[in-house]
Length: 364
Image (cartoon, rainbow, N blue to C red; front, side, top):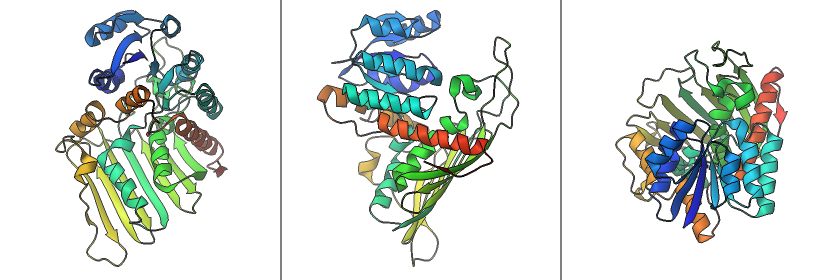
């Protein structure tokens, strides 16, 4: 049995991590830490967690766990993870991995030195359409990659309310770190290493002060990045928190891939549509639906995108469940590790540097 501790009692822990852990036959959540004592105890009661802390240091010092899930704000990722690694724990830490590239690289190096298993959870890698696109590209459907265009539209930043994700001291980066990290990870997964970045970003919404009334430096709420790949291809990645999409999940994903032998399109509306279309060079009549194979779908529901998303992480051996299985069976983690998370953080740093310097090209 893998004994698990978790830091963070937000809705994300409730929706993503605890259902997956509760459904895993080899996982036992034994401790939780949250800053709000009442919320932490309610969280523990809801998930039958025996030990509750308001200080993550006490949770780690108490021992009795094999791994730690770090699902707290970005500014806490580095200190919590480094302390967990010092204690010899396996660690799953939320993305973005740290506030800066050097911090993230130190985390990856430390984990490698200690010899533990790690994961940085880039969730969209596991969507059936994403995995099918990856398979098609690897199998040569588009031939030599020329360019990709990926757009992530969501609207959670349209209000003026204070959100820590737009507070530079807490989040490090805004939409580039929150949503852009997903797209940078996938772009690199699809087409290979990224060697340079340019970026335009802005904070278009003036946001309220912190709850205590203090002011802060706002992070970006919308951004467009251009990336150059080692293989000569390039890509355009647009991420925004200001788009009204009107879907039940409040977002849409659009991906386009072109190469010497063909074209692929992937679209998820986060209601009922999740599809891949393709057209190979010489074909006429426009792109046609390419059915995602049953072996990629697995046993997840297909009618609702949100149900697919739930089932992938709660019922299939993906991400959190994959991490637990890797620990229990002492096998490599197949999904994104701290090495991936550190590289993406370095690309985030490059994008921020470009945006701060008149959209200059930054080699990575």
